[in-house]
Image (cartoon, rainbow, N blue to C red; front, top):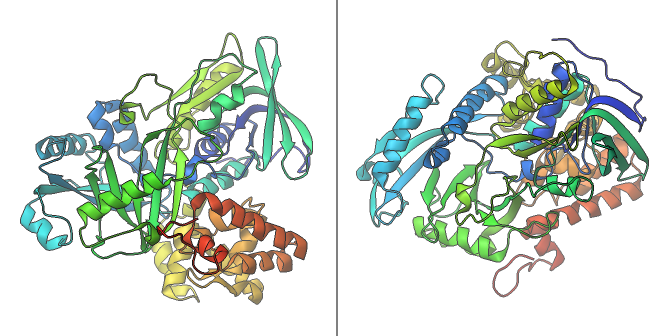
Length: 560
């Protein structure tokens, strides 16, 4: 692979590029990576951090696309199976096999026979690229292997093999690292204040640094609006367009292990509305989700509401009678907006397409593309489509896409299983800490240990629950594009997604930045306060408890 030298000075604010991408979610980053790998000069601009919007609020599943068979969207199923298969090869440290049990109950709207037929069709489409064949599970086997699952009306089950990306945030970080390695510039915490519209052409965008107020321009042959649910806001008042985004709200809740909790993901039909939902193990805890609600509210204030939390708890209590979960059991919640195409008059949000389209606004606005839709699983395919279209617009001859086989930075080894075995054997850390480093950083885990070896103070554990090291905080800022404490905690070292959302370790991590990254005490205090403020949208139990002097819940057990 050629390594392009990054263009422009580090502090330059006025740039001229081939491709300006608005949005550093998984799709925007994937576009930057693909385009840079094909020789284009690229800048990505995002008003917040990489992956801090929709990309960090997903179900963390790399779907083969089983659900899309229900809508006969065979093209999307085929694409999802292919992309899942490619991710296992290019990011083996981040992607896991993930079996899930689908129980059939007599009250379900989808008969067990129909689901079995769908699984047969899926297995046939996934031939040679599957994770194992689905198989039927009779009631007596369910009773033996999943004894806490409700047997009222149970007619059998099926075991289906899919995939999970426990840390979707790291998928985004590695796309950032590779895009930068290939020469792309990624400007986070930088707002797009407007498009540069010159007659019938969009010639780039105007920017403002969120932290310093410094303004600049990025002039580009092609501007890509990849702002996810915010695509209409980018166009509003500057580009005449029909409404493009019709995203639905999806919420999840996170709990400690509970009575009757399963060892396998359970994918079942909700009694209240027939929606397929999950109860799944994740990093020693459980995630329940997700909802699928029409949303017309503020895109910047998306929070799981009480009704959604009650719905997920009630459905889980129904299928696991021992659970007896209440709102007081919820550690934290997360809500996001799926970037779906606007579809008027839909009575069932599940029927809205989960595919993606690349809208070329020419001839009215030449040089402007908007990305509608897109999923975590298919980010690479979306990026390939966008770069193909961008090359056409620019008038360059097509160049082959390399991302189907290009390993992610954490997977750059000829033999990943051998590397993992060697690392675990040689690491000075305990087994759990070593495995965590491998899961987060892949081969770059050696870089963490290297920093700690160079400066023993960086071997300090900054979070007791996870065993995260001070070296990770330093690497997050120096090498992985983190700017704020929230960037470090929630989207690099991931201690912000532990039981107390990193509240007990935030000050410790800020202190590492004081000692090693040039922060002063005032900035450290401000960063901790800003971090706690960012956590409010998760409604964390620990934050409510701290604010309430330990009580933390109202008379109904609600978190604040």
